[in-house]
Image 1 (cartoon, rainbow, N blue to C red):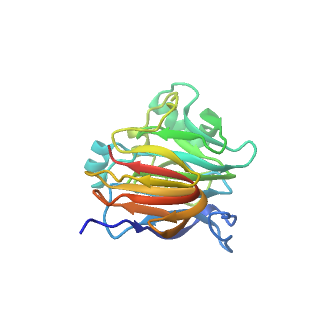
Image 2 (cartoon, rainbow, N blue to C red):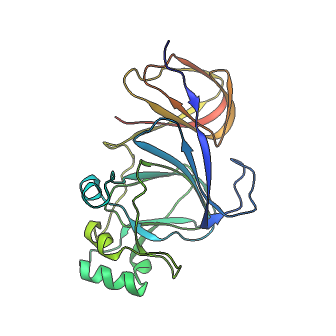
Length: 258
């Protein structure tokens, strides 16, 4: 029997910077939800989350595979964000506005001036921002993002706006590229490929014969393999699954490991 697709579980996680406004993807919350993780019973090299922000996240950086294996017994973390909702003026930061020394980076992180040295980018729904390991980055308030990343939870904080959470200055400075970064127009890399699909009626999806993929519904509703699917759902499609009928009015992100 060929492997069968399955809906992924949703794990709602409170964050100090999260939001109570989760609609239309989920019912609004009484608590500040920052992340919704999509999980399966199978360990996958990719992790998909929705992020909901009402405050700025910490200024942070992630290690590459080599550094993470040596210091954290983990994968590194390269990621991308696809913007689902953005309040007017909402922005993310990717890289610095100028190249500085590592000693200067430490000074700016300790003083909090690093926020003024970040390259802030105003974003709109539909934008995609690719953040490779080593890129100093931050996410502002008023955003809903779909994040696709290596399955790793290693995050080094450089600055956290005075919140009582641990900073990781030494390791942050070890792995940071302390200079400008220009996000490329596409987010495909060695760790994941991503494409957007628009379904207006009916479409036969041909699963990849040799690798799994994930389907993330970001807008609309319909049916997948005769089961309901709507914005805020995600499905795991195993390698070699039978062709799937997708019906309805949907926008999907389709991601896999190249």
